[in-house]
Length: 87
Image (cartoon, rainbow, N blue to C red):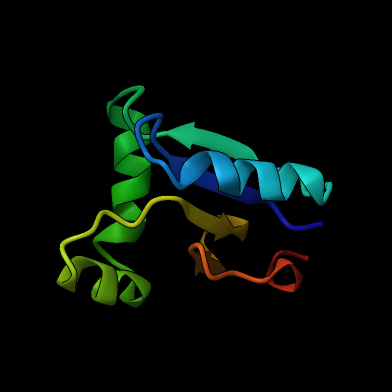
């Protein structure tokens, strides 16, 4: 089974639907609110600042939430993910 981590923020309108999608499909995940503290923000920024998946997002001036990370970075996915990518 893959380890799924969802980085989000309580003010992000796209985060609750992502959590709902995963829950409805019985996909276990850990949710990390990046505003809860510096360690949580740094964990997200480790991906945002170093992964090419974020290039298009940063160019658009967006943050990149919700961000779904599979197995500590094996894959980094966003809203356009398919459930097969998580299995």
